[in-house]
Image 1 (cartoon, rainbow, N blue to C red):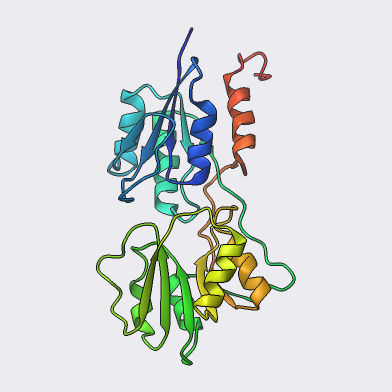
Image 2 (cartoon, helix red, strand yellow):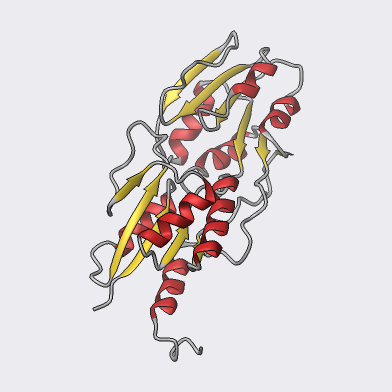
Length: 256
């Protein structure tokens, strides 16, 4: 039996779920690539490679050397540079690319959203009046908060924020999703939050804060996504699995 080699660029819920659905299949050899930024990563269901590839050329070399048959980009919707590198590397190595990108959140009745094209723009949109702001950004994306030191920030991250943000008033919460609606509502009420800064990451793992904000009438300052990767993307793990099954069929069965 021929072994079909798959490299998944991960770090998301979808990457882990996709890998778990493939684990144990004798016809596949699956490797999950992680950047290694998380201090205590979740245990993964397949072999893991930690570290970057030094750009698209390094990734293309890896694909060739490992004789990878399929590259899966299941990175975060805001990981635009990694997705661009994946697209370029797949083209250079002549390896098929499958993109898994969860749909973005859509505004609905009761949402009070202000859209921003960047984190600094979202911080500026908070205004001059001091607010109590719940911040759910990556721990390496918090520097722009220092431009608005009048606010009290409640910052949630998976790993400790080091160095701390240079503002007079900041609290830090360590937690990992998925988050439940009741807990998010309790958190927002207990911390007396009157604004949220978040990225439009999409998916269900972090959506509870959006629902809780809607229930409590809290405005959300939402950073728009970067442009989606070129080409078509699977919007769910189930859709990605269907595309993989199609790819694994003999050419005649694929209509080629």
